[in-house]
Image (cartoon, helix red, strand yellow):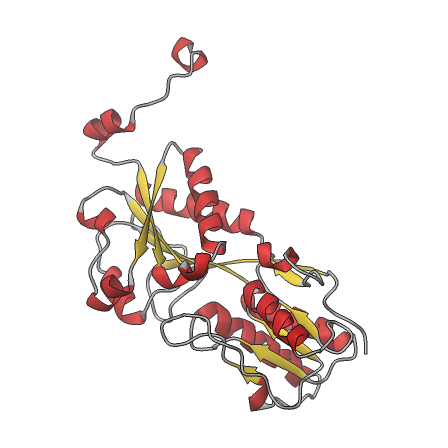
Length: 294
């Protein structure tokens, strides 16, 4: 009690000698998610590290370079035995994940999942949220609605697209293939948006960053947002409030996702045989100024 009141903390290095644990969690992020100073996954990583501290554990972030991913080299935090478990933050290539899944310490996926994988995953309920977001646009009179996102890039982008598609089906709206727009290349790098000649009245973007870029592009073309084109996004990130109009978006309930991920990886370290499968975290639509009735 005296030591605690004077600010002393447990020395994890000393404790690890006795328990054969490192009291560190590795947080892996693909280089493609931090290109161009992308802030979202850095902020998520910061939240995970803060939550881990409540469990007497530290977080070590490692950025997986394109070369590491291509060459299928296991992360240094694992090879150097620095961590007790790993959180993979954002989807890596299928080939690299196949190698990663052979490691001998507990691991979970955050913000994505892989079909037929035995790795537990913490994900936002992207399918239903994509459905709700599109339904909101339809309720406001929109019938010409495009989706912006490379649907083969990640499970999250694909599930959001499928939710968008479900909403169209339910309202008898035909899916136009030229209204499904690519936003990144095969390496995950964002590309210039190629808009259809006849613009839709609304766009569902797979993330706020893309929504922000789209609004700027539309403005440069002389198109008014939301008067002539409505735009919605996902993630409730910095980009949703960076410009004008403020973007209607989805709050993924990051607090709940992070808390769940930290709790699950901690439990798996104590009981490696315990499985949780895919845990869906519900989100909330945040209505702002980027959508208009027509």
